[in-house]
Image (cartoon, rainbow, N blue to C red; front, side, top):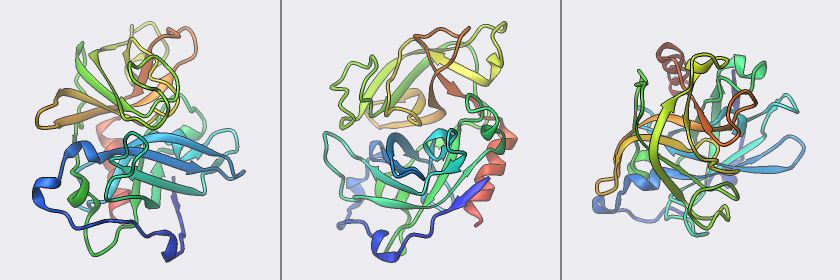
Length: 253
């Protein structure tokens, strides 16, 4: 399912300044996502620019794009790549042109919680030219491995200000849930509540803080209902075929 946002040109502008090649830092690909719901209320999430042919596509959680209670897509999506400590990067604010989610999310908001969003961008450039971008795994590895998770939490347990304005980071091992839990193979977990505002934030495998290079292997969904532990944040794991279908849909519109 997809939603096209008809945003007037004057609202699509961003405050981009001149960039130089050595200014590009992949960490600027992660940013604050602000969504306006159909009832006028707003939520904040996290999104990440990924490497695509289009060049202006980010990955986030479907519940940041589609309101499961209202049964409607949110009406406006704003993205602030590189946002940190309450300050916008030189890219500033960009607005969503189109978002796509897997249709089954509407019937089960605990699964298929993955969305891709393409943004309006100016000057004939690609967003990833000015923010950097992360690659992604199509075949998500299992077992325990080192994982770094980013987000803009307003609460939760990440060791940072947790005010929704700072880009926060957690690093540790992610794990597969026990097979006896419902739909266990559709999730990975980490032993921490990453908090409101971190939804949609990237899970990176073997993140290198020196080069800021890594591969996205999931995005934060949040806490799951019992019998899942109330202390473990889950990431919804995509199926390769489904992910490529979504990517093809968002790139070729």
